[in-house]
Amino acid sequence: MNQLKETSLLNYHKKYGGKIIDFAGWALPVQYEGIKAEHEAVRNFAGIFDVSHMGEIEITGNQASDFVQNLITNDVSVLNDDQVLYTFMCYPHGGIVDDLLVYKFDKNHFYLVVNASNIEKDFKWMKENDLGYDVKIKNISDDVSEIAIQGPNAQQILQKLTDTDLSEIKFFYCKRNVSVASANCLISRTGYTGEDGFEIYLSNEDIKMVWEKLMEVGKEYGIKPAGLGARDTLRFEVALPLYGNELSKDITPLEAGLGFFVKLDKPNFIGKEALQKQKSEGLKRKIVGFEMIDRGIPRHGYEVIVDGKKIGFVTTGYAAPTVNKNVGMAMVDMEYTKLGTNIDIKIRNKILKAQVVKKKFYQKNYKK
Image (cartoon, rainbow, N blue to C red; front, side, top):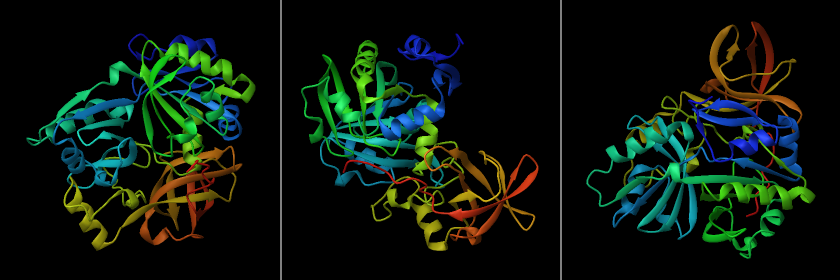
């Protein structure tokens, strides 16, 4: 695996029994003890993830706010300093470049967190669309490591390592220059699991010490290291999208059912015209949730069929650990999106019955 990029924690993943795979060109653990055990630890206690593969791009300058506003679908003008926003960058045709988090430090300083597989593409897209704005766009991904600690005990565990009162960090807000076990960190109350928790950005050198300290103090609170497998089942149960599954250059945010993060009343942003047109003309397809009636586990890419006709495809499917059901999300033609609609899923050449249900299979437990 020498050709794969490595995070600073690779040896720690091996130490804890991590099964290393190639994920977007990175050597990362898919699981340690097992996906189900790690999933349940996050839902009931706490889990710790190495998410250092995520990309970080800094936007600074007198027109940073205007530049970011034109780049994304959501509205950056409503943000307070140190507030975080979930949003999309879209192509002019409305398809998705990436989904990302925008951290506003102040009106001249933004911090964008993008998907690992899209770092170079996103950075290039931003550079191509600076259109004479007075901004500096800097890809700092190689200098930043990141830990996510998620679950009902996350705050208690992290609090043991810092004097900063973590209860003061509200949901989707951040705090800079926080000392965690003497390491300088950026901490936000964000995550990708549907549980309360924090994402910690810090240097490549400090992450090893902070990881070990969290594992140490978290022992009595049931902490477990968690891999990419549990990260996917956790986000899926609460209908959080994944780029490459529910989101892509061929899928718009409206088709993904995420129109809430598209502010069409903004003066302008890349892709606005196409999305406005799609909304006014009406969607031809949309992502829905479904539950298997017959026994079988749906997987990404499987065909969705009604009366022998292909009407869509599965974007994500699992035997969901918390809800203990075989469920999935699928992109289907609009006439089949109503709750209660009967559909079939083609699983290994068998046609198995399923039904359209609400996408959120599990209720989020965020601390608002």
